[in-house]
Image 1 (cartoon, rainbow, N blue to C red):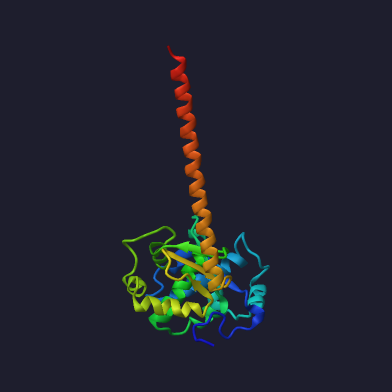
Image 2: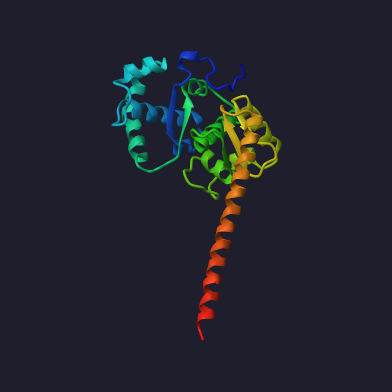
Length: 246
């Protein structure tokens, strides 16, 4: 199995165990990914265990469900820093994303920058597609999400994110090649970035795009016809009014 494969080393019984969090917690990921992962963990555990949005009775239930050990010092940080992060993000409307608990554990180790960029792009794309079978997006959105911004930002994208994701570069191609192993399917030679995660294969994605474009084309055509009819009715009424006037 590839060293970057999500769920690496994690049994199938925990394949659905994700730490979900707002995109802003990715800020500074390439500079200090371990610190970012810590913050993601503290936030995610606090939310599902201690907050009003909790889904677990207590921390022991969470640990049993996620098959993970949490040392006492981390429990303190979850309760303190996790709460601070939760409160600061509450009600802000940030886009959400997630990381599998197995991937989180695996990336707590030392990683080179290429590995980190691959994971960062994967998490960013997840924040864009959410639960849809496929989605279309653009570079400025992808880079903003990779930088941890909920809204599109251009001037403040980290230089290293630009470096790896430069259009038509070999670096970018290599990053997307790794994501193919994570069941990210990217459309061939399309305007913007059409993609699917773990739902459509290449043929299914290309077919879905063609159908979507045809649907959009028909919608535009019908809208033009609607406007033309409205204009014709307007002129018809004007002509009738002119005939009535002496």
